[in-house]
Image (cartoon, rainbow over all chains, first blue to last red; front, side):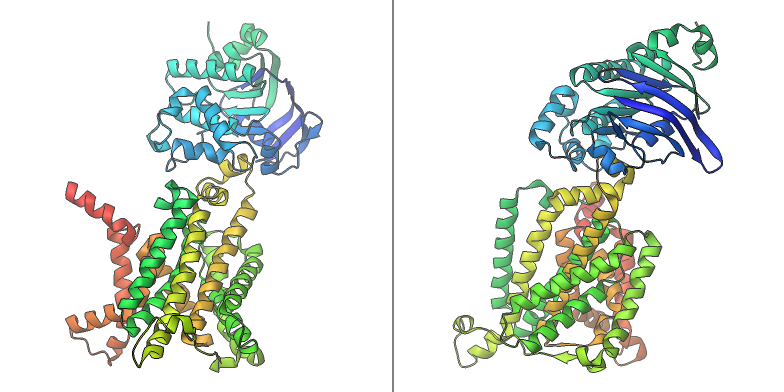
Amino acid sequence: MIRVENLSVSYGAVTALRDVTFEAPTGKITTVIGANGAGKTTLLRTISGLVKPRQGSIRLGEFDLVGTATEDIARRGVAHVPEGRGVIEELTVEENLRLGALASKVDLAEGIARQFTQFPALESRRRNYAATLSGGERQMLAMARALIARPSVLLLDEPSLGLAPQVTADMMRTISELCTSEDLTVILVEQNAKSALRIAHDAVVLHIGRVAAFGTAGEVAADESLRRYYLGLVT
Amino acid sequence: MVRSLSQRYPTSFRLVASVVLCALALAVTFVLTPLDDSKLAGGAAMSIVILGLSWLIGWSGQVSLGNAGFMAIGAYTTAIWANHHTTSPIIWSLFLSTVLGGVSGLVLALPATRLRGPYLAGMTLAFSFAVAPLAIDSRSLTGGSGGLFINFLNAPSWFANLFSGSDALVKANAQWPADVAIVVAAVAFFFMANLFRSRTGRALRLVRDNEVAAELVGVNLQRTRTLAFVISAAYAGLGGSMMTLLSGSVTPQTYGLTLSILLLTLMVLGGIGTLSGAVIGGLIYSYSDNIVSVVNKVTGVNPTSTFGANLKGIVFGVLLILTMMLAPRGLVGLGSYLRRLVRR
């Protein structure tokens, strides 16, 4: 479980997040939605330690992640799949997967086999360079790389970016299955509010750095004013 | 793009390959003339340093202009040790020089790995400049500008017995240093081939290509960069030690900025970040005088004129430009360039 409390982040004079408070329970998907510049990516980057907050706490269980080095946060089981996926194009699929286990003690062969079971499309391409993968395959590779070290928390930054609607739907289903089967705490940042709300249990709506709404995905999806003003969803 | 054969095969394969290639090179020394043997020895020593630099630049993306300085540390360590312990086996000289090279690399890395690109190059450049004056000033330890001399490497009797005729011992003594250099280089290359494939190698490449992704999988950037720097310096120390053993002397003027830049040039000519590139770089170093004399003959330049005396620099410069234009991956990558040309 991740509990974010009174989190504020500034880039110089610009405040990116202001007093953000919410809770992401274990075994569930919490989606963070909102317009461009709402602070969604900053929120994920702060959780994984890439950005230092001005104030507030981020608790993983009882442990406060604020002030911990990024690599130590990763070792504590927080896996972050960044926007743009961060796969290394000049390495093969399998080599990319091995990178995910660099700092952990998991059995590499077993871990790779497990990810290939989870993402069968990757197995047939294990010896191909990541540069040759499609957008959807890259996203799968990035997720598999994050999962290989058996994290307890999975942070996903816009996994649907640049993917066709059908591919996005498959991706969302996979995320949902993973969340249940691996008992993960998933924080899913999305622009694509509609598909994110469909699989999420809880939703945080960010609006220029503040929490505009926090509730179950159903409540948020049903709230007409939220839909209209923040999510750009018109019925 | 940095890839090499070493990445696709297991350790046992790399061990066998190292032994076979080493044996082949040793066999060649029995055929070559003593002059060629001594050139080959220098090339082998140099290839160790080039490999260390290639690892640093090709795999971690850090540029060092200070590796001649680390060579100097290895070279002086060997000379000082050998003069105080004349009967000590050379393995100790090699070992100590490698360790001290690595330690001095660590001292420089602590501040240096926080720097990037031109700033890092600038700091290592300063180190390159500092080494020769330091060696000249520490006269009691280093012999000042005259340098230090040690006994030449003499062939052990079992090796001399392999030769026949009245000049057997002369032949054996001429060839022995080359064989030692080749074996040392083979060990260094075997170790590096494994390093390329190791967890550290993969982490380093990830740090080079995507720092954020590296941090997110739990890699400590500072520690990984420092380790790369230390290993590179240790290789330079080992190569410097070999240079002293081969030439029987060490002088401060040898290890200045010019050598650092020559190392970079040779590395680029051979091919950055590959084992074979380092071998090619070493061979070019060995035969650079031959290359220059061929150019001399073809162009008819008088070697004693000012222009002729600087011809080596010009030839290297032109070679470097041509390599960057035609084979940016070095002579190692030339093969794939030619294949593409034929297909077109």
